[in-house]
Length: 119
Length: 119
DNA sequence: AATTCGTGTGATCAATTATTCATATGGAAG
DNA sequence: CTTCCATATGAATAATTGATCACACGAATT
Image 1: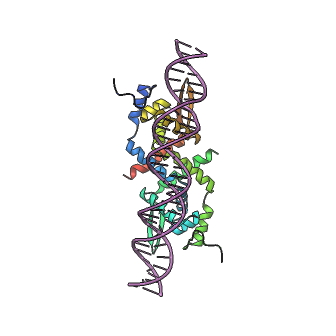
Image 2: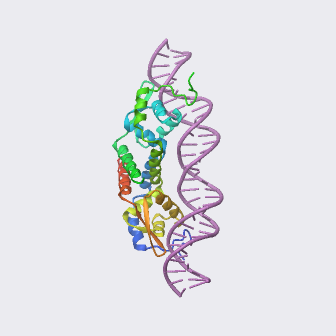
């Protein structure tokens, strides 16, 4: 009689499920975490961050390093800024970008290591 | 006279650019790294991995924990398997999934920490 | 062997997203 | 103030992708 015809799940192990459920972090928070990961999940943005881990660079130099249009780079920098992964300072007409903190480097290093191991 | 009408880049600081360029990792490798990040960049997959970090679970239990269809979970598990982030063992009709290694946990912890700091 | 049930998967659709193009903004120099 | 140039951005397009649906597969039970 209860509403149960949406998304029929049959073999649920009640205790295990509720145990894990209680240990899950908030949906909203995990969404934000995955959203941060997403910033690293595009090769253009990853290259930008990796380049910036070597030294601070202005937008057009980043474009030259990645061999991409200034516009494309600028759009991606906007995304990275919005997630507090990069910051910038103005110097004349130019904008020098740099990594926001050490977390970014750690994240990349960790994933680089993981990727290397799987070869 | 040189070919220069594709992707006009004007203000290039030659030395800095070639310096960073020489330090860049291979395009193909960085692509693979970003591809691994991408696995964490979807909230469904992240929830799956977080749940599995609590305990091994079969597919339908995962579906119950996340309150999603078994099919959706299975599709995402396929992605995670292909990237060597989760493994599974069969037990009767069921498939119990678990995290492939400690890197996965480390990655999530690091990003969770970063996300918390930005609140 | 027929049925049941947990899981895997191909096709499809809707939504998201990365890049390009054109243009706007704003600091610096004449 | 006008021009130049580095950067930012809105609109449009093309490509990617996550969820659903329908169905196939395979182990276990009868």
